[in-house]
Length: 121
Length: 114
Image (cartoon, rainbow over all chains, first blue to last red):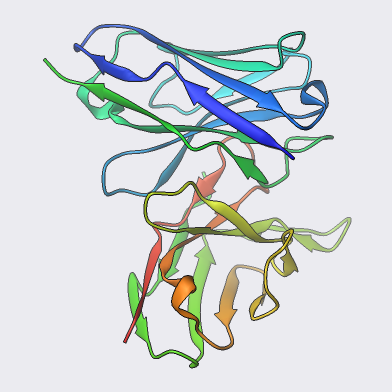
């Protein structure tokens, strides 16, 4: 059974940093694009970043480019999101999700339960 | 970026009745080479992560009941629930994965029981 479990969320002051993790099991992690999606309180879904199977290509939403870094460790079946220079508008539930096994043009077929990030003084 | 626009924003339907949600993309999401529309629908129940309902505009995801169906072409798509059940109360999102990045979602449609 495919499982994705996020961790690392919490309360952080504006300008601070957090590192989110997503532990994966039940499928061959290294075969899939992986994605971070966020959802601000009471709002819709926003794609944040995605990373290719071998980590060679990474893409970011304009709202986080230059502040967030996506990475993965295929040996540890883990996905990460390093978030720096956090702003109040980054407050959201962050989900990791599985993308395609070939190219990036595939839907997100499995999602974790999410981890809450709150940016506030 | 491709903008996805859903209508209506909210919808109330009686149990057993049909529910229809629309999604419009700002440009075609049809890949001519394989004749597939790069559109997905997700269901998000309160307090839960999104669940993939449909992809390629009309292919049901794993374990999705056949009362859920998708249709459309070019830039206009529809999610239909043929006979609404109580467990279908949720917010529904469409998403394009034709031009990535960025993946873009519709704003969501809240479905309630009348």
